[in-house]
Image (cartoon, rainbow, N blue to C red):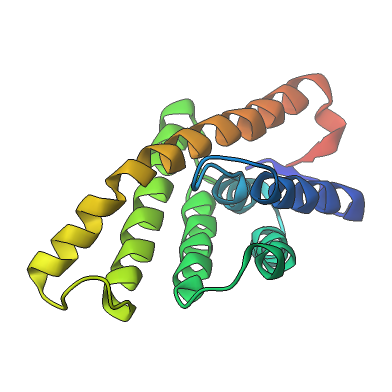
Length: 173
């Protein structure tokens, strides 16, 4: 597997800033770059800790501005899982595998965060009907998550593919 040379604090800082900005600028609910950056980091960073560091720092920088909520642990857990999904791409990063990983990331975020909303919140009854109502109410937000993940992943993985071709010295085996 070829990895981006991640010794550059500048590159990590740009990713963190970009992810943070997509959370701070006006956007549709869940249409941000955080999930895509977690997936991309998992797939391309040779140092595992960097893949976790980028989305978590972006979240920690913006959460005090956006606001804290009881289900934040589920959001962070979702992004940790997305980094792991990205790491599964390291052995075979093809277009199809990447699209599948993006969809899996969006679905896992949806399931984990909405399950946590149901389990810890007071809006829905604590039974299967309440769980179903919670997931049903969240469907309108899912398409924004999926569209955002597809768009930002296309930008990140597309740029990575271009760099591998045009500037191979920035990539190491």
